[in-house]
Amino acid sequence: MKLIDRRDSALLMIDMQSRLLPHIRGGDAVVATNAFLLRAAHLFGVPTVATVQYVAGLGPTHPDLATICDACGVVPLEKMTFSVLGDEGCREHVLGLKRRCMVVTGIESHVCVQQTVLDLLAEGIEVVVVRDAVSSRFECDLETSVGLMASAGARITTAESLAFAWCERSGTAEFKAMLKLVKEVDIAKQGEQR
Image (cartoon, rainbow, N blue to C red; front, side):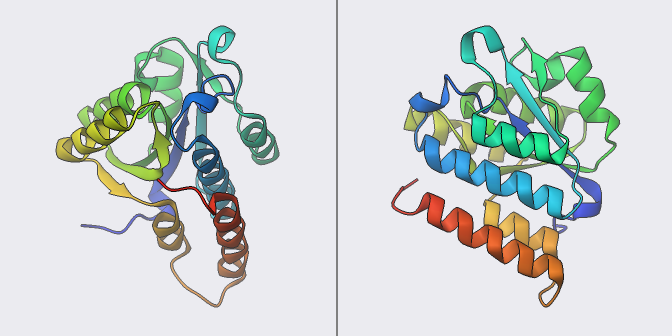
C-alpha cells in the first residue's frame, strides 16, 4: 500500500453546512478537524474542493470553514445530487484535478460522503476517508457507512496521520507550521469523544 502523497492527492470536503452541523454527532470536533485539514492542505499545496448541498435548506458552509476556504481560495461548489460526481459541474471539477488519490471528509457519512466515495472508487480513483472528519446524525449510520466504504476499497485514516504523510519529514518549516495546526486542533477537540 502506497503512502498518501501530497503531489498526487486532493482534498474533497463535502457539505459541511451550518444548519445541519448542530445535529451531527461530534459536530464541533468534526468542524475543528475539517478546519485543520483545510489549513494542512493549503500548507502542503494540496488542491481542495468543497461542496454544499441544497443551500436553501441546509445553509452555507459553516462560518469557521468558510473563512478558511476564502483565505485559501476555495469556492464551495453547489450541488443537488447526493454524490458529488452526480452533478456534472462538480464531476468535471473533481475529475479535472487528475489526482490519483482523493481524500474525502464531510457530512453526512452515510449519504453524500458514502455515495461520493463509491462513485470515486468506480472511476478508479484511490479514496481515503478521514474517520475523524466525517460524521452523521446517528452513530449506527456513521459506523455502518465507514465499514461499507472500507469494504468497498476506501482507505480509512485520521486527520493527524494524513497530515504527517503529507508532511513527509521533520525539521522543516512546513513541519513546524503543521505542529502548530496539530496543537490548535487538539485544543479544539479536547473533551469531545468520537
